Image (cartoon, rainbow, N blue to C red; front, side, top):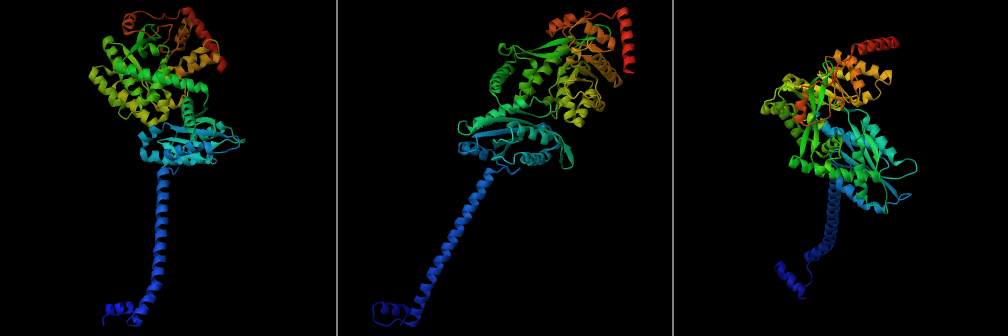
Length: 504
C-alpha cells in the first residue's frame, strides 16, 4: 500500500498509525514552534535594523556633514521647541555669528582650505558654547547657538569669547589663515518669545557688529530694529535707482599745493532719488556692499568717470574702488577692458583703495596694484589714518600716493604733535616716492600750513565742493590757492627749527 493510501486508511480508522507517520508527526510538532521562534526573532532583528537605519538617516538629515554640528533644519526644530525649555528664569540666549573675510579665503586659498577652516571654527566655538542646548552650522560660514541664561555669564560674555578665539590665527594645511567673527545676540523669554524671531534679531545685531574694525559683538535692542527697517527701505530704493540709473557723479577738485592750481578731481557718487537725498554716500556704499549691489554700482561709476575723462581730455579723475570689487579675480581685466572700450589713456585714471584691501591679502593686493601700475593707472591709498595707520606695511606696496584722512586736520595748528605727525607722514611718503594728498581742507590757514609742511596736493571744501562736470570744466583754468608769502615762509622756518630742537 502506498504512503498516501496508508494515511487515508488511518484517517478512516481502518488501520493503526504506521511508525513512520507517528515519527513524522512528532518531528513536525517539534519543528513548527522552533521555526516560528526563528522567524519571530528574524522579524524582530529586521525591525530593529530598520529602526536603526531610520535613526541613522534622521541623524544624517539633522547633521551638517562638514562640521558634525546640527544643520539648519535641526536648529529650526530646536527653535520650535524653545517653549518646552525650562531654565531658571525662563530666559534664553540666541547667538548668531559668521566670519569676516571668509570669501577671501575661498577665493585666494581654495574651498578645501575654506572647509578645513570651518571645521576648526566649529571646534573653537564649541569650547566657548559647551553649555549650549543647540549649536548649528546654518550654511556657508554662518553659525547659531541656543544657550540658557545663567547667573555666571552675561549674554555678551559669550559673544566676546567667540570673537576672542576667532581672532587667533588658524593654521590650515600649513597656511596661516587670519579671519574674524561678528556676533549678534538676542535675549528672550522661552515662554513669551518666538525662537525664530529671536534668531532674526540676533541676525540684525550681527550685521550691526560688522562695523567693528576686527570682529565685534552686539546685543539686539529696539534701536537696531528701527535701523534695519530704514536700511531695508534704502536697499529697495537703491535697487530701483540702479534699474533707472538715477545716479550722477560730482567731482571735487584736487589742488597742486605748489602752484595753487587745479590738478585733478575725485569722482563722488550722488543719487538723484528724493528718497535717498538724506542718505550719506558712505551709508549708501555700506548698504550696497552688504546687499551685493556694489558690483554693478562700481561698474556704473567707473564707466561714468571714464566718460568724464574723455570730456576733460587732459585732466585725471580718481575713483574709489570698493574692496569687494577690488578682490574680484578678474578685477584688473575689468578695468583694462573699460579703458579699451572707452579709449581712455590709462595715466588719466587714478584708482583709490583703502587700507583694509591691502591688509586682507598682502600678496594678492600687491599683485593687482603692480598690474594696474604696469598698465599706467595710478594707485592711491585712500583714507590713510582711519584703519591700521601703520607706516611699516606701506613698504610692501609700490603705490603712487596716499591720501591723509581729514581727521588729521582737526588738531593741526592747535597741537604741535599733530603738526609733527603730518610732517612725518609727508616725509615718509616722499621717501617711498609717493605723492601725499590731504583731505578735508576747510580753511585758508590749514591750506597754507600744509603747503609749508611740503604736502603735494590738497582737497577740501575751502578749495572746492563736489560739483557737476560742467562746473569743474570751468574751474580748471582758475587759481584756487595762493602761494605762501615770504613772511609766512620765514615764520614757518622759525617754527620748524623750534620743532626740530624740541624733538632732539
